[in-house]
Length: 122
Image 1 (cartoon, rainbow, N blue to C red):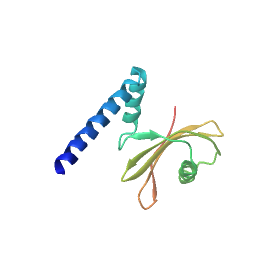
Image 2: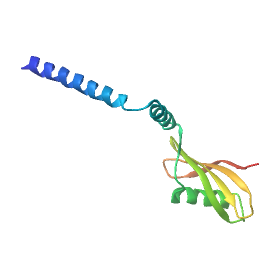
Image 3: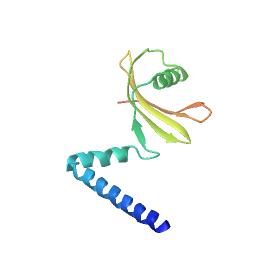
Image 4: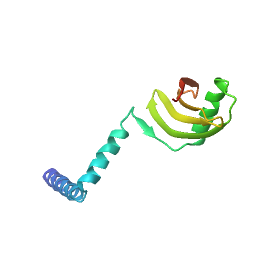
């Protein structure tokens, strides 16, 4: 009985390996390069681009309030996150007065915010 289970397991593994190899052949070199690049972008601890969500908007308002910026927010862009012992958020801020800023905020696991970078873009 055990010999049959081992034999069937080996056959199943070989079949899965064969199917996976055939699927990999369908990917063109440019698609494979893109796949590898995407995997590198999504590394644990690496920065990952995200959409500008309500969380990012709230963090931008927090940054502006903490730095006593009076000009209204016009646009947020280039948002990204990084998972650490909590989460880092990085984004660009365009104000109504034309000033551009880059901000980075650390949010710990207790949902407490700390501004780590707030600098004007040149």
